[in-house]
Image (tube, rainbow, N blue to C red; front, side, top):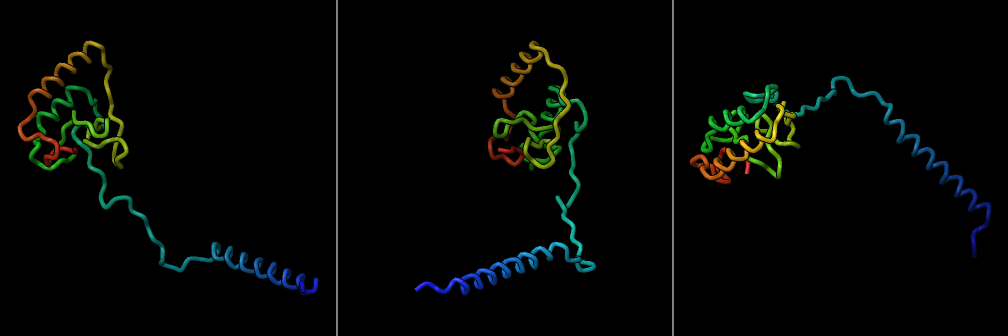
Length: 145
């Protein structure tokens, strides 16, 4: 036997009023004042970023060769000790050794390049690959890979 219509209407009105009251109480919390002194800050990093020798300078092949010549594969990788010719997931590092997607990555300042320069750089890259620095193997402390 179904309940009488007035009883159903009364239950519906009560449920509606309850829903409205709960939504009002929930929305008021957004306007409540914060307790004094409970302000929090969000820090991205504990320290300021450190950038390398060629930060904000021309990042051409000569600069990369300078960094490569001072690179020590046996020492831990840092903004001053990295292989500028090493790629990670298909990307080359910036002038500080950071890769695209890393928090401190900056687009390097690149110079103009001609086809002849690219061919010369390719020959140098082949020479580097044929004669790697002693200790520069994947997994060494100075490598990203």
